[in-house]
Length: 121
Image (tube, rainbow, N blue to C red; front, side, top):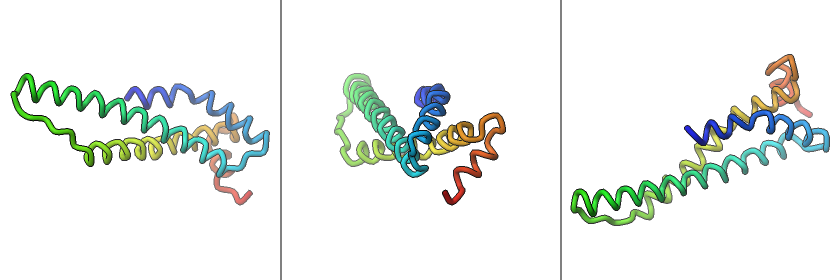
């Protein structure tokens, strides 16, 4: 939830970035790769922080409150970490498309921007 609001809160900065990059001659693929890398890094950092807190909390509860053993599960944690990074990229895609649409479409909204996004140039 916090990660989604942080990404959505920087919408106008992203629109300005798209306009500057297009002015400097960036292609759609370059802009998409920039946003994808940014979302992947954000997702991986958020996933790592979440996994650390989840494992510390689980270890504390299991050892002290429930008196059970605790074993760190490398495979499950790595899979969850990669999944969070991937989901952030997938969830950030519509936001990037909305930024492109608004940057190119201007006051017309998303229609002109979506046409620009899927045009052949």
